[in-house]
Every structure is written in structure tokens, then in C-alpha cells.
Length: 143
Image 1: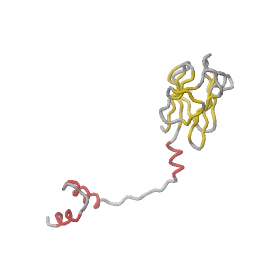
Image 2: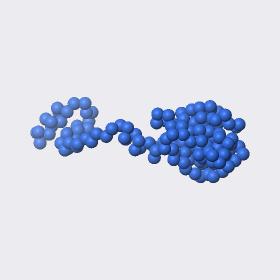
Image 3: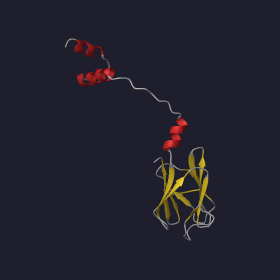
Image 4: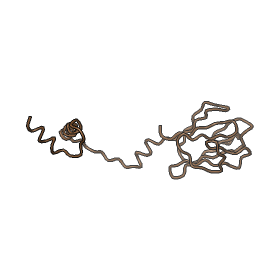
């Protein structure tokens, strides 16, 4: 028993005896090995972006974003077609710019609102709500 108190006395930076016991116990645990994974691979694996149409024609609907650019509008040529007269033929684009997605109004009649504020162009963050006419789209990053 005399070995434990001497060992505990050498441990500094702990406020209570319990903290000292936990620290000593951790020192006696076997060491684990570290696997190095390049940061880019980790970011790609965890960052799957998507849009979720939560209200308006066609809701509920999920759209995966893989990079590049998509156009949202009522035209048959739009990548994401939403049939409502409140949207322009090509209303909004969402583009991957260096791993971040940027929403851009394509000179639409009714505009694009991000979290209630009218925008021309803005970088999207997780949970942002885009409103185009009566359609609400939520941006999600990293499933």
C-alpha cells in the first residue's frame, strides 16, 4: 500500500484523489496504435451534401449533391424540376466551389431567400433554409 500513495503524490495537476487514481489507471493501460488517414479522404467520406425539399410541390424530397452544379426551376431542362408558377424556368443554381456549396439566384422573378434574407449569391451552411416562391429547401452537410 505504500507504493500507491507515493505514486499518487508524484502526479501533479490533479485536484482530487479520484482524478489522481484515474490518471494512474490510464498510465497503466496498453498503448494504442495510430492509423494515419489523409485529411482529404476523411473530409470526402463524411461530407455528403444534400438538399431536402420540405414544403411546396413535390415535398418531401431529398436531392444528393455530388459536386459540379445543379439548376432548380420549373423548366424541363432544369436538373431539379419543381412545377409551380412561382419559380422561374431557371430560378436558382447550387454550385460546388472548393468543397463548399454556393446558392446563386439566376435573375429569377421572385428572388431567392436564405434564412429569410433575400440573396443574389451565398455560401450554404448546414441547416440553411432556401425559399423560392412557396418552396422551402433545407441544405444539409455531412450525414
